Length: 209
Ligand SMILES: [Zn+2]
Image (cartoon, rainbow, N blue to C red; front, top):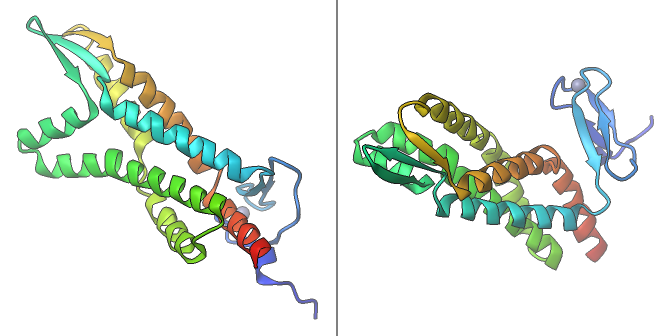
């Protein structure tokens, strides 16, 4: 019987069909021939690309939470709406549950995700922490399901549209930082998939052993 090593096989996340992995050209993606879901991508410089994008995502996140997303004029007074201000206001107004859920989903999870991602890429770069990166990659896949930062931008846009006519609104610098962060975050989670990072990990530490 023809024996195939397990790490040469890949299971489709969409329909659970088993496929045999083949080598692809740079940035080529393999798709499931049953349900057409993306299976894996071969990035030639995943380490450099991943580290650069992770750092850029982290910087835009810090910018997005440091300055005003929008400035609103209510009764002649201008208010700076910053990301932390939204949570503080929710808690101040005793919306405990909403405050907790919102700060968890759109602040702490995305922040934790990007910090861990950057840390894993740094460890890869230094070729250290074989066991640590394994634990962190497992944690990343668990966090990924809770990363809902895109929904946040949509809710801000909806809120802004509703406010037009009631108050004067000026878009702040953090709005653009937040938009950039969300685009980078989507690229990071959709394109540089965790499954690809597992492969990269094998490559890096195997070359060392
Ligand atoms: Zn499939």
